[in-house]
Length: 85
Image (cartoon, rainbow, N blue to C red; front, side, top):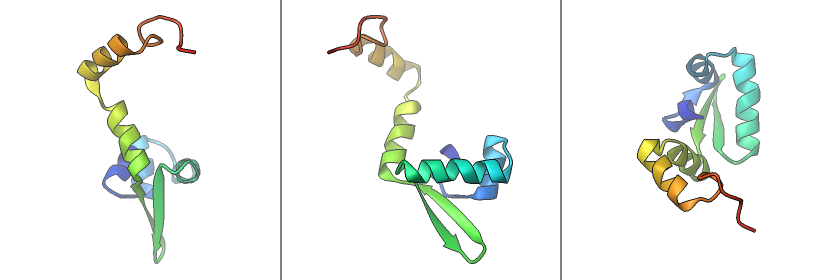
């Protein structure tokens, strides 16, 4: 998904993830079906880009140590407590 942040072909996404283009194609289908990326065909090339939802999820994942610390302070599950009802 990170490769799609700036737009990536299936081959570029595969290279970025260290998988085969076939595997990347399968993964991009799942990400597209989940509404996290969009894919557009240009001749024989498909370019994948993030949707707003995918970008938000990626930003949350990239929150870093400071973000994880804040999350642990506010989320009982992250801090080892019981989940909220």
